[in-house]
Length: 330
Image (cartoon, rainbow, N blue to C red; front, side, top):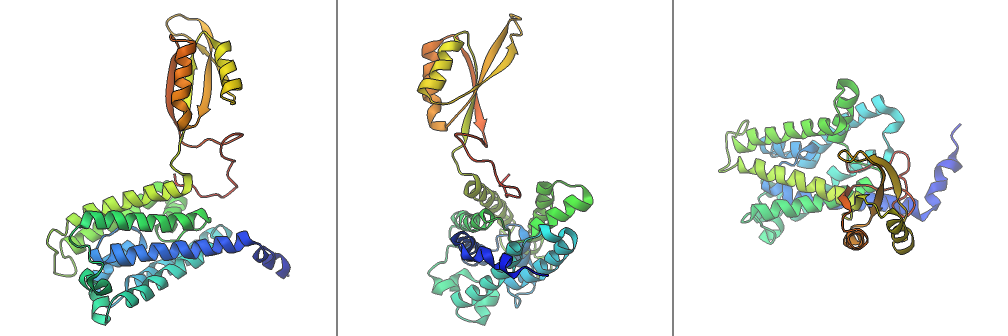
């Protein structure tokens, strides 16, 4: 018997509503990025919408969002059958909402049916947003907008389906790593864009310099992935220091009393001297690095220290440990 009260209880909290609102806002931002900056210029940034852009060049009467449904719906059905409860309702609704939003927005920003078929940027908003004179700037803007939208969606523990599902399926049945599976799927889409848009396969109309669109597409994919990573993990990486010094007690007092942090001693042995010693393992914020190095120099000018990036740092004084099932950028 279904416990209706248990199902409806989360709806009474602001966090539940906020999460769903952000999913739809993120999907809308992503859809707008495609409509205004990606689709009119035939960039092919992988995924189901990249495949939709390729197919739209062959079948211009079918909108890109519609091709999104043609790919996403079978993929989602397959994923539900294969993964069951692991495939959440948020992803299903996000994947169903985004193509429809793209189709509606496309019809609103182009003047007529012929313009919707051609997706000519000169007709977009009456020519007021025609960026065809600077394709590099256009692909960068599009990548950032799409990345922000995707980042908002993924932060709410959802995805927009597409090649994410392909990656999951390849991981399960072919033993291919998830990230590698997505790379392969996106690579096939970009290659198809090169053949269809760049060389005119299936259309008989190879665009002048169309092969350059593949380079712009790769730039778009890279920037989008970096923006999503920034949205999920932030840009302020911590720094990890390994400090080898004979002035351990003074460094200990500085770290605990002045820096107000803790550190760890790691047993080490000098390769040349053969002497046993304790090496300090310390994590600090990026802003504290120069201060710490300056203090190490003052305490022990002969100290040896290595500084490296700590991509993620969890625990007291840093980020809380992620909840089970949390999505990460990397």
